[in-house]
Length: 418
Image (cartoon, rainbow, N blue to C red):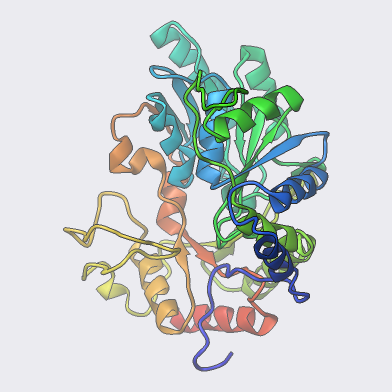
């Protein structure tokens, strides 16, 4: 690795043929620089062919917007309850609150780290007993690209007649039993943020079940304008459509999506091989039953509590000045270096050690039921996600991560251990 190169978790990677620039140039040359346009139409068709199952796709400004519209299409309204995986990024839960509904946070199963189907059904029964009505929707999440048990989730959802909005934002291209995530439920959420499997700079999409649902979502995404020669609105809509410029990037990215997925899987296999004999370090991998086909958006490890790491005595002694990972934007300065739920000292020490070595590593998502903003939300927990949060770490896996980089990352981890 070059002495001045930094290895990022998942850096946006453009096609070698420069097709993204070609489509963007076409947009400028034809003055299609606004939302909608030929690139948007073309990108949606590419996505429909990719996910298959006869689904329709609406390209949107973000994955968060897709969750929001998916919930609206499912009929979620103020006062409702929505069952959602607790072990996730906040984009899975925040849109529930946008609608005035309440997230009901469901813990994970240990093998996939995704929503526990048994706990899901337990929560459904308990909410019905407590409130007299069933939850309005279910949101499973493909954590770090790992498929959830889609068949069991759908069996439970269908039995109670509850619509499912699949959050496959991290699982673009992942499959369960040979079928693309995002095509099992009433709708499916995709994300094309700057660090996802493919990028449109910023953007997302909603996979819909049929033509009628596609048209309804399209209306909601374009401020719900009726067909008059003037602006008439009979429902509240949103300005959520993807721009023709961003969609041009997406069209170019679709030409290399399979290459990206193959690379992430290759990096995962390298981590598994190179770390298998390192005591106390465990690479999280998909179950070996043959049903799972993860894209391994990010590769993750867990670190045993008794593993000693250089600098561990200094963990959490100083307040972090900026947010760790991603395009953090504006953040509040922390008032304390610690919270009541945080990664173990050795995990934080390893993150700091790797950062100093030019490697971006990141804690796994903090479960939503441990987030202050959701302290009053009902939660059905089994301890799995909280225990993983304390020992888990994300490692680089993106297209710019070379074999040499992976070997350097592994050697850095080994050199950090005491």
